[in-house]
Amino acid sequence: EVQLVESGGGLVQAGGSLRLSCAASGFTFDDYAIGWFRQAPGKEREGVSCISSTDGSTYYPDSVKGRFTISSDNAKNTVYLQMNSLKPEDTAVYYCAAEYQLFITIATICHPADFGSWGQGTQVTVSS
Image (cartoon, rainbow, N blue to C red):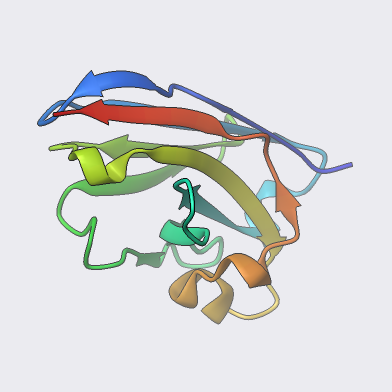
């Protein structure tokens, strides 16, 4: 059974940093694309970063590019999302998701509809 457990969320002031962690179990980590998604109240869930298991390719939307960095520690089956220069508009519930990477585009497009396994989410609140 695929299990994903997020941690590291919290309250931070604008301009601050947080590092989210996603601990994965129940599947062969090297075969899966992993993504971070977020959902703010009243908005659709959106991808904020994905990483390919095959070549480490990453995806970031323009809204977080240069501020967020995804990384993977395959020895620990853990994916991290380092978030710097946080803005109030980054406030959302952040979810980790995994999907067997049949195609690399799962990671390079980073759309929530392509991911089938999800964690419970962690709240990130950025105050102004």
